[in-house]
Length: 452
View 1 (cartoon, rainbow, N blue to C red):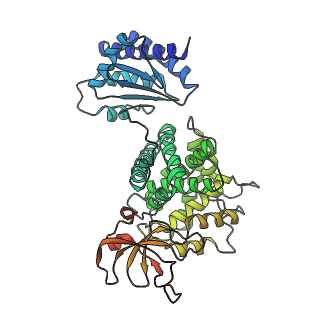
View 2: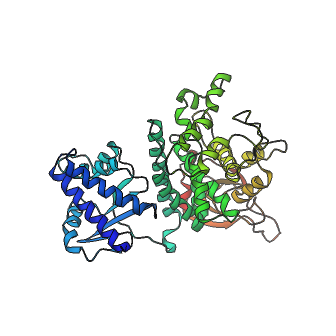
C-alpha cells in the first residue's frame, strides 16, 4: 500500500469514527471499534513522523503533504463538517492514545456545548490532538525582526506556563507542546538571534518562572550556535534548557518566593528540585534523553561542589554547562519580588570571579563575548544624560555601541529618534558620547524593543 493510500485510509477511519461518535454513546461497541482501528493507523504513521497533520481546504483534505483526490467525494462531507466548526487543521502527535482519540471524537460530536472545543479537549486530558487554523510558513526576511520575535517569544512563554501548570497538577509535561515552541525558537535563534536575545532582557517578575524557562532556552541555544551546533542537536539543547527547572513544581511557594535568605532546612527543600525534575522527565514518554540529565546536573558546578551532593565522579554534559551559565545569568539580571535585577557589567563580574568553580571558563568567555557589555535592546544613559537604546555592539570595543537616542540631555522625549555611533571621534580626536550606565526601562516608561 502506498503512503497516499495509507493517508486516505486514515482519514476515512477518522471520518467514520467521528460519525459513529455523533450517533452512539461513547461506550457503544461501534464507537470503540472505530477508534481502535484509527489508533492502529495513527500509531503506524507516527512511527515514521513526530506528528500527523490533517488539513481542510474548502472541500478538500490534505494529510501532511498528500492531497487526497481519489476519495475526495467521500471526504467532502467530513471536510465541510470541520469547516463549519472552524477547524482548518487537526494535528495528531506521537504518543497519542486510544483514549485521547476517543475523547477527541466524542468531544467533537457534542455540538451543543458553548465551551470552545480546545478548552473542552484540555479538560478531557486530550493533549496530543490539537485543532487550529492553517498558516503558511513565511521564510522571507519580513518574517524576522523584533515583531516576529515578540510573537514567537510570547507564544513560548504561554506554552511554558501550560507545561508548568500540567506538571504542577501532577500530570506529565507535554513534550509535543514543548517541541513545537522549541522548533520556532531554534529557527529564530538561527535567523535573527539579536532580536530574540534582546527580548530575553525584559525584567518582568510577575511571570518570572515562565519567562525564565524561555530565556534560559534561548540563551542556551544562542550559545550552542556559537559552537556550530544546529538542527536536531540545537533543538535538543533548547528543549533540555526549557525543562531544566521543572522539578520546582514540587517546591512550596513559600520557599520558592521567600524574600529573605533561606534557612538550612528550606535550602534542603529547594535542592530537591533537581532530583524531582529528573524523575518527572525520565518518566515522561517521548522526552529527549538529555532533558533529565540537565535537570539533575545544572546546579552541580564544575568541581561538583554544588548539589545534589555525594554523587561520585562524573563529567558534566556540555548542555549542562551551557544551561548553568544561562540559568545564573538570567536569574541575576531579572527583577524578582525580593530584589531588582543587576546590571550586565556587575553580573559578568560576579560570574567571572577567578576563584569561582561554577562555570567552564572557556564557555563562560564565549558567553560574555556573545552577550556583550551592553546587549542590543539595553536602555542606557549617556555622558550627556540623554537616554538611548543600544542597537548594535561594536565588534572590538564593548564600551562603545551604536545607540538610538530617545531623550535629550534634559530628559525630554525626542520627536524623532536619532541613530549615533558612540565609537566616532570628533575633530579633536575625542569621544563626545559615551555610555555611563544601563537603565531599567520600566522606571522611564520606555519600551526599548519598539525602537529596534
